[in-house]
Image (cartoon, rainbow, N blue to C red):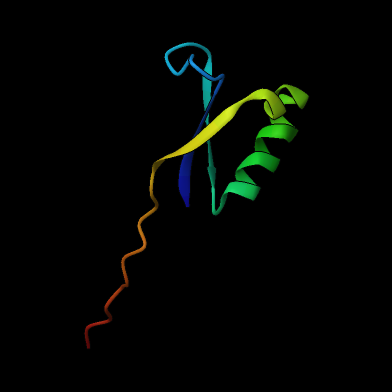
Length: 59
């Protein structure tokens, strides 16, 4: 999962929140369900990529 930062344009240091999601669509939907229609007016970006490393099984 990636970590998305939601913020108002020009206010990244102001009121923000973070959402964990697999893609931008999921992030927006989670944010909308939690914070309501104001999310439509906000910007968002990935601030931390999830760990996509392959796990090697040692026998």
